[in-house]
Length: 178
Figure (tube, one colour):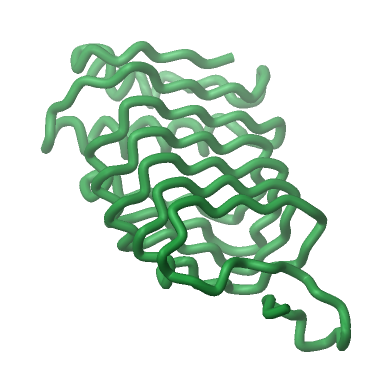
């Protein structure tokens, strides 16, 4: 069975992903160490659902058919980058630890539902996400369903994000945070 293996561990599979680039759905779960995996080889993938993994860097880039992306209980020691996914409509990131979350909103313009849920986020990270999303809406106005950020009292937006929240609401997005 082919899989992605930790070079420091022999004989232990750390993550098995399908070999075929024709897969339309990638789903994996487990306490795997997944190091710098390149999912861009799966050109036809429409859904990615990943749970309980550790990764150095995760880049979701250029997946033209990707419609749904869900990451849950993940630790990414460096950056999560999402870009060039024009059909991405549903983005759910729950309890993700990452140094930086970089989303190129301009190249992911079909988003209609965005849901972030994390206990370890602070107001600065929430402000950055709201402001970067609002800046994209100024360039490319579009309606959506909702933008939710759930992170408890430490993740409430500050007054620095007030203008961003207004822009998001003016584009007919419901915005939730707690």
